[in-house]
Figure 1 (cartoon, helix red, strand yellow):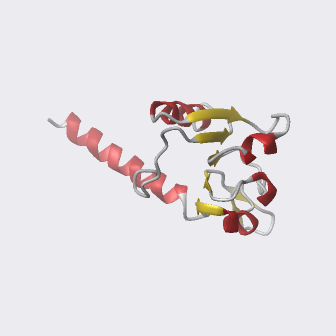
Figure 2 (cartoon, helix red, strand yellow):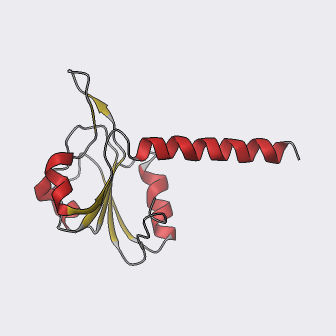
Length: 136
């Protein structure tokens, strides 16, 4: 996604909200490999807003609807919402309060329709590559 939108990670301050073994930790490693400065936080981080407000890029995936509010995001930040939550009324929402945060961002991913379809496409591409490699 960063490559597609020509978002340079080198030297950027990135806050990863969520330290899971499936998303947060691998994402932090990929970001470090891209020369970003990475802070890994979670829902129990003291003063989470302090960390997110300082970030050029925020990547969040903790499963808490609307956790990231507008006052937690600096102007021009890039926000990648990996969270997906089903509300009592059946709506799907992310971990970011999209409507409030979007006006502050240079880029933001919607939920649904943002990271999810890209993830599925990449899984399919990697499955196809693996199948072709096995049949060599």
